[in-house]
Image 1 (cartoon, rainbow, N blue to C red):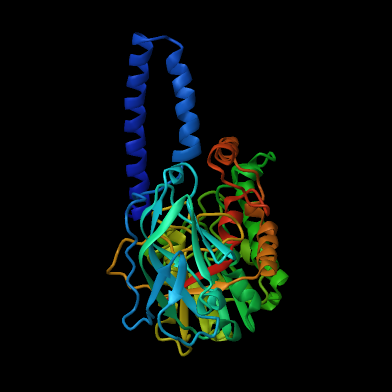
Image 2 (tube, rainbow, N blue to C red):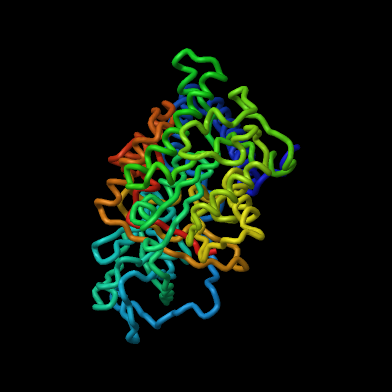
Length: 468
């Protein structure tokens, strides 16, 4: 059954159509230059244009950096009065801050002309730096979580690099219980999703469960290069990622008895959901039995009986796990921010499994490891903070929840990601060349922890969730 294209797919299609049109126009101009001036000039201009594209225009940004982000926070959100005094954020009223609140500052960020070539960023009290789109000129949302002390003492300086902060700031305060002292279950559509989104949270939780839904066996080119057939490569990749999903959480102190791999097939959850009783085989592994990828599980589950990759089996597995673990907090993909089809289905499967169940969690926290509008988010370098992502639907009410991570916790998270087999292979040559050009011409630094882009995106000063 064909699935309708997602918003992300529609945006990519439009982006590629516009790029093809731009290439056609550019080619016609180069031909005209060659005819009118010199035959070699178009070749030189083509090389320079390609270098400029790779350095400054290769990001998938599906909106104008001049657009305002349009957030709507819940009614009654605490918003104490603040103002800017020579780049210093000043509270106009005394408020009680314990230090673990999520603090979000809405303010206009305006790029300088250099900010069109280098990533604009805002330094916060000299302790953090948050980065925005090149050419930014609109409302953005800084994450001040973990900066309570300089805010309360009037020492929170906002210093722009290749940009200015201006206009009337609006501070929003979100108070949450400490989820680290509750039973937490992280739902990971694929091995590494739990670590990318919530390693800091689950590594500090009093009790944590990691439930991975798929083996992530497809796109196994790295293993095909070792001489394996396509099916063999997919199977060994799935087995390795199944092992990762069980073994890597041990680095965070999560007992093996609380790590479960359900072994369903990658990118097949939408087809399973469309026909709940019909088994849906792997796209590449030539398998229609999920039990190969469940061999490391610490206890049996309902779908072990027949190994059928069906939606109803997935729901039965989830219900059994929910009743056994009785989580107070479930961490799962956000239903609208994260566009990956397996992530959307993972969230929907958990909600369906909870219907009528005798155990109900007190809190659902959403995360976004992917994004519709900006493939580079979170922007900026490893170790820096995470500002709120682009949102342009004011009808959507969002409640952020930010967990600050210490340098030591970030390093532990980086090491966990480094153990994940899917993040270890080298990037394609073109991507590596692009990063060299961006480092030299655009001043972008790579992550010290690893080559894969997720080391830069995920090893940060915050983990960002959304209370659902």
